[in-house]
Length: 98
Image (tube, rainbow, N blue to C red; front, side):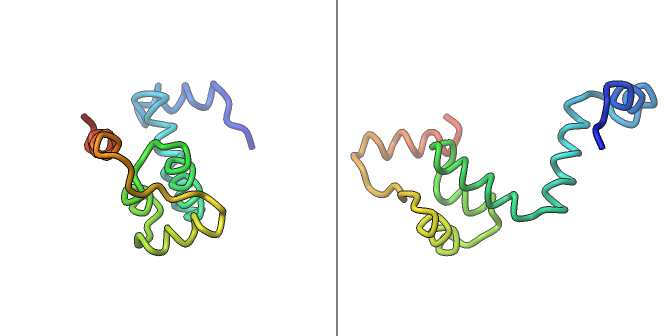
């Protein structure tokens, strides 16, 4: 079942949603509630592509750090550890949104 523009527009005209972004946000939330395993996939992808820290990815997945590390290990994804002081500062800055 595909949702079309008319359905989206009517939801906004009826003031059920104020924007397309609100509709998408609600749809994603509902999707993740109905398929919780997708949270793990999102977390793995975000971590793999360097978008979030290991801790943040585990939190997104709803797992402990050790559980998430096991998922990464099983998928052959390298866990970033250590690095130079400058690299650590960059990771911390990125994690806190600076």
